[in-house]
Amino acid sequence: MSRLTRTTASALTMTLVLLASTADARIYRYTDEHGQLVIGTSVPQRATARGYEVLNDAGRVVEVIAPAPTAEQLAERERQAQERARAERQLQLDQQLLRRFSHPDDAVRAMNRKLQELGSLIQLKRGNISSLVQQIDEEQRRAANLERSGRAVPDSTMEKINRLQAQIRTIEQEIAIQTVEMDTLKSEFIQDITRLEQITGHERTLTVYTAPAEHPDRQ
Image 1 (cartoon, rainbow, N blue to C red):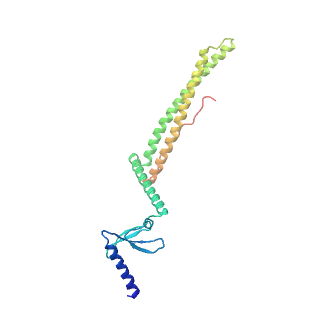
Image 2: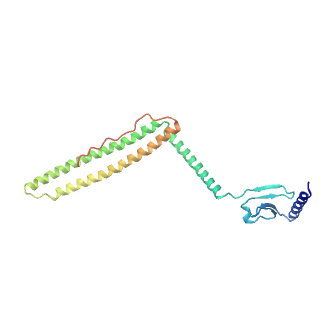
């Protein structure tokens, strides 16, 4: 061992002995803002971010405090945490989906039943509109005949026509809402079916229900 090395080691030993002599004192080794190693009984606040070591009275490291994470490291940890949360959420959704359907065709059947129910209801309401249109046409013919004969059209006739037209508007609004419901339902089911194909490895073999084309009864 060279004289310089023996001198440095002796200085370090003396420093540790002096520090350890302080009652209940903890010895720390850290790097200051100039990159120099410092040994002391406390660590400045600014130095804690760079990490430090706790030494015993023999100069051995008994604990290592890691440096504070950088902004980039914190961002990466947050990204990973969010990714894990998304994966866990997707796993839960997949498990729920598999409890409902074991094969994509099971989901297609369920979707088609619901779409057919809504489609039948819409068709029924369109039939109601056709009936109301016929009633309006009949009332309008009566009113036209009265006018041609020079007689006044009763207020009750016009009130009935207005009432029938209001009923048609109400039914048309209901049909519009139910049509949106069908589109939303179909979109959600298609997403489930696609996911089932991915997680089961099976493709659907059934076709998707298509609503009958609308045939307007009036212009």
